[in-house]
Length: 347
Image 1: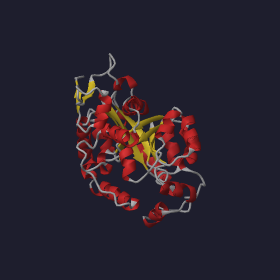
Image 2: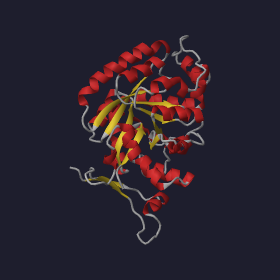
Image 3: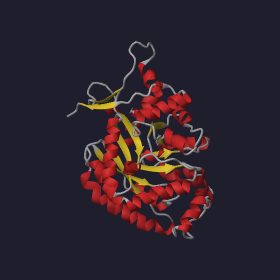
Image 4: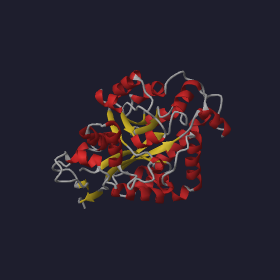
């Protein structure tokens, strides 16, 4: 099979490993922030480990959310074809400082871009980045990613400027009176900017028909991380409705924290395919496209790179199946749990 595309990873969290979810989103988020604050020097090593695990799991292309310049550099130097989406923050009165820091970091990384590694921008989420930060990200003329419509708490924050996220910002001293309720769903709040750039929107777990219409109209790609979505208890993702109207839906792992502790290849996109096949009986060919061609489009790579067509890079993964079984080999692969390996014959 072709080497697969992981469009949404947090490689700098690899060193933490799998973490049980207790149901308290705020505590879980604090864990991630504490890790980044106390183990910042481990970021490059964590990214390197994530790249190795990804290769071993048959992943040939990655869209990574880089929590630091060092994390982005580590991926650039790994040789893995990838896009590093540099995270940026700033809400309320902190937006100007966030924008200045973003431009400074982008400037420091520009010289490292190559044919295989490109730099994107990630305003973290609507509850941690204001509209000016999102606008500044679009104005960089780079690919832009963000977490969007991921959870009910986010919707409450954007619409009402209230709820557990607002409470946490106040406790952290990151609240000011310029943060106001918008009365809007996050997708409607960002709609005017979504049509100005090739956006990759992570999750979109909570959408209605009108939001799907917006996503279709602006041509956004959706990074769906099914195992992570189930980990957090999100139900009924509308990825099939999105695909039906022509939205480019692709697959990601999210962070290793969300992957099962008994998964031998937690950075595997095949594991995400298997999860959807076994949970939803999703069409195998649709899953294969989500794991390869669709992801390449979302990250700005040539879709041909993720095929076995003549002239494509000789990057592919090997997956066992039973040759005596008359069932379709791809269906067999989605039903079994054999590990995979990546073969790279391009060097």
